Length: 624
Image (cartoon, rainbow, N blue to C red; front, side, top):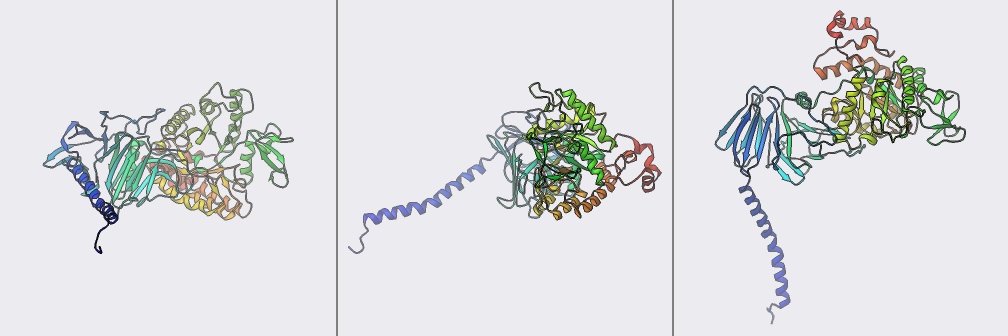
């Protein structure tokens, strides 16, 4: 029959009907689930002030949300559904993100229940909570505007807590620490985790803090990894999470970048004020490990007119390095480095003579003998206006199982050998997080206590919120000799500063690569205006001395290094003002031993007037 429907056709029609009808059915099911979820969303039952600075909000699921105020414009939002109370985040080993006394006075704190809204108000901000949804928004009372608002209730998963905020079309975001190659994060996502990834797109020293041009900042109070999405997944939505099982975040509401960064510093501490010698370039390499043999084809030209090649293994006829040149090896010693800078008329502020795996600072069979060897170098360097520091690959306190060559005792190094710089590396603080913060806190306290009240000068990696109060940071091991090295460092430095980590540096013309005169000189030029300069020698295609590539690079680099020396008073003053807000130039310049500074005391008196020498300017130990 012409119009007969066969069983095969019926089966096909059934399959097609089921396939197409299932799409709207499933969509409807999901819609129904969403609606049910919204209807059953967590509500606010009540809110009460439990002390003069804290408000506790009771939710319909019998959980509690705490708003704890650290000032008129800073509050801590805490919620632990397992019943825990406010506490420091877990830290193994022990470390603290917050300073000892982070709170400021809260003159008034009002709580009002207005029908469907709970209002929590200070003199500067107001938090409005929707009782039906538990969503909230925060108003800046100075500008009468909304600083931020939540789009979804706090999301709690087993090991993940998520905040979802509204993103405005004209809103921009900065922070997150050392996000290599980036500083503005709108429409992007950033990882708040220690990746030890040191090229464009990698993360070197994350910070769980960001701020918005809308007038607010946020710091997650944790050492756990996180991820911040600023509209990359969906425009109009800022999604933030950390791998933790409870919520603990700080919000700060203020006008502009400076004010918000100062709020961050209120909680975590002001950036360390780098000592005067730290504003000059430093030279880093291992001078107590390798052997040098003559090699006219591939060797490096030395002062005796011969070319030598370096090897980490003892070779026949090889000359071993030492710090003080006491083994008829002076041109391969740490002292020779200092003299080399003087010979080429190049400013030098500090030297790390053990920066390399397996390099100690002495060749005796005892730690104390090696400490004395280091002290001998420090005394020599001090006469030349240079300070001595150390690189570290292991624990800084004595361990019986470690050989004398690699044994460390940071107390003796600071107290007896006059060490005033410490550079940490991934071999020691590669875990980052609380481990890194614990380590630099320990060193900073020891350096001050046993170093005659010396200001700590620590250069670290794998930082976190709070790192800035003890250390500067560097961006990792990178390859010089190419324009990309400079290109991605400029936004990296900007982003680090906007994250509350202003003391940032990187190896001059990279630790690797080199042999590109234009890139080499450009790096010396632009880093004239950055806080620190590190010449990491011994790993690149050429030596990393400023004079390594010959003329005209030598003269250009010398000119800019001397310019950097001349602006030390201004750089130091800006740094000092950023720490305590006082635009003063201290007496540190009166006795500065480096011959490349701007000038003498009479020049400062001419520039700043007789008051420069008044007792009020001479107080304190900022000259160290």
